[in-house]
Image (cartoon, rainbow, N blue to C red):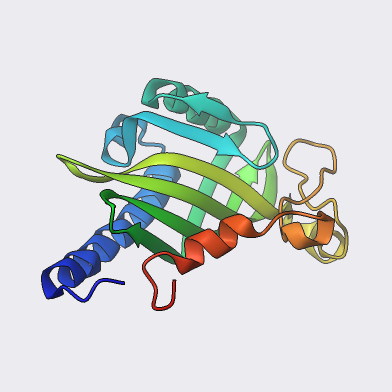
Length: 191
């Protein structure tokens, strides 16, 4: 971790801006404001998902994915539990992030609860920080009235009508945690 006061102040400002970007994403999604995607994604951004449902590149393709999702959704409310950010001194205009959150929503007429995680790469642009790569994943995605029943199972993703494995905790199904060590060690004392 750098000791240069100017770099450290810039990192504080960057973290603040990235935290606001995370919240702006949730507001834009809840309002279905696809015209504002340029405020959160780079032109060449990639959107993927742990369950393999999404894998698109480019802001226009991302807009199409979200438009399709919005067709199945009623009201949504996303809220953040926090963002961990990491920086690399050799790449000052790139950052990584791990954002956790929840959503309450209506999908195909069913009230559902969702626990979300976003593994991100951010890029500083002339307009500010933007998401350059995002992988969405789910701890659970289930009907609200089945939450207690679903939480005790490995197949907690019920978003698509069938029971699918939850994306995390990856340790429960042999996942590699090197990505977590990389995110949490960047720009940290001893990292």
